[in-house]
Length: 288
Image 1 (cartoon, helix red, strand yellow):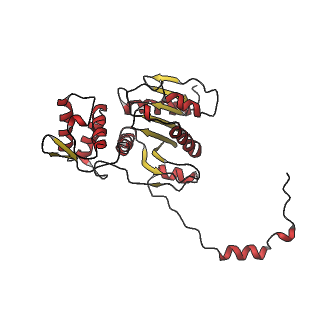
Image 2 (cartoon, helix red, strand yellow):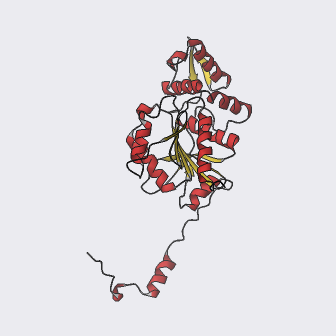
Image 3 (spheres, helix red, strand yellow):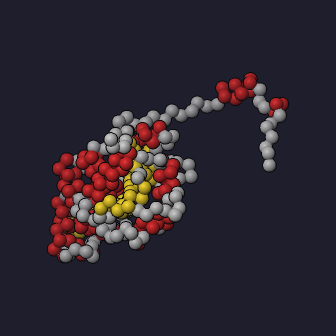
């Protein structure tokens, strides 16, 4: 059905247009925080993003030696598993209640590490309690990866970014910028069996709205990605049937030259670094 343009007599006059605009309230001037290139790149893409406080089991302003000690511990997969379990206990816990994967002596060492960093207190009967309870481990994972992208790879970083994109749900876990490129990382702290198709679909909606130069889907797990994670991601690709994923090394996969999937096998940040390097090379001019 063809829609006919309005008759000339139905259109507002020039005076009416000017009067209408002159009577309108001024638009709000939204400023981008200075020195935050990730948010600036989002603003240039038309998004008025904001940063929300991360849900952390430690003070968000942790600095200095205490922060470096925490980062050093978080670099160990076993410690991340332990801290995740301690958070999930939502209260008092014994070291072995926080993990199924460590020997008692090592679990106790990790609990004492938390006490030494002033993140936990001892309680009677060999129990412990976190000083700063958190709802989940997700915020800690985002904080750790953002910190390491900043100090190890020189990225400008923002974590816990509220996207505010129309018809696109969820947050941008970590966004980072370097070399004029925008990097988006989706962080998953649960095992692959908990990954649902709607989560993957939401991730792709954010990628398509944001159009970053490079996206990395990060699973903080030592388990294989090929059993469930890769098929779920492949099913959401625009090209169907989806091309076979390309293994770069270990559990580091390229779904496209601009979309990567990594797990934590051997070294989470090392794997992310490999994916970043591969993606930046894909964006570079052809070799001579």
